[in-house]
Image (cartoon, rainbow, N blue to C red):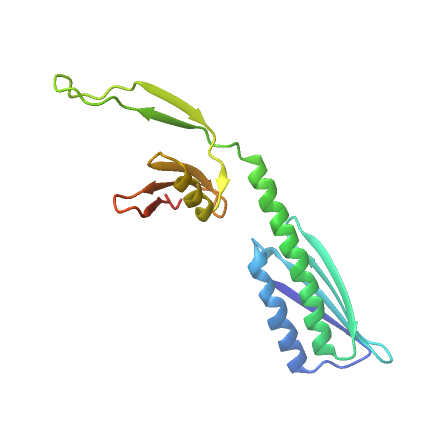
Length: 180
């Protein structure tokens, strides 16, 4: 991440530069390619207020923030908070677009007849197609309590993965999470 500073109407101390550089370095957790990111930080002092203008640009993101207060350190903190909010919002927007783009998984449920003594090979007697509903693990456990079946296939709302919750012999529940 390349951070460039411009100071207007005051001489910046080394401590202020290090402080701002460390603060803006924390933004890389929101950015997929921090090596290709440029941050231009413009710090200035007017008569009674300290102003910070920041422009962040990377591959597909270009955002800016402006803040003013009575102390330069607090101004840096405030403008950083604004940038974090914008980056979080953009990340959530990207995630929701990705979720919408993926087609829902179609599951096939196979049923096997009771094994006969003559025939040792199982045969498929029924096939069912359904789209697993997104829900949390707790919701799936509550849903399985109301059902008479031994298992429930669902899409985990947190991880977007297909999970299976099943009823154990002792009455508790087990969870199969493939953990892609």
